Amino acid sequence: MYEDKTLICKECGEEFVFTAGEQEFYAEKGFENEPQRCKACRDARKNAAKADRKMFEAVCASCGGTAKVPFEPREDRPVYCSECFAKMNEAE
Image (tube, rainbow, N blue to C red):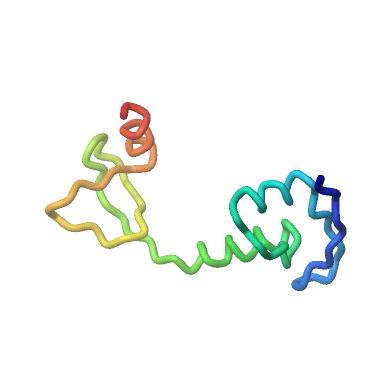
């Protein structure tokens, strides 16, 4: 049903392949527009947004280690490091 398409990245101008599998995924998710950027340029844009994010340090309520979080911690709410947070989610 779908066939690989060669598209031009609007960021770097290089050709990239929009695979049949990616097209099927886009259709399943209801996306109507084709990707405008190659994978490398998409990843660069995502990482640029993360670099601008202000991070706050807090003490993990579970292990006592340092936790870096993208929000300002409050005294009335526990904060967990990424490892403890992941363990809590696995237990649920």
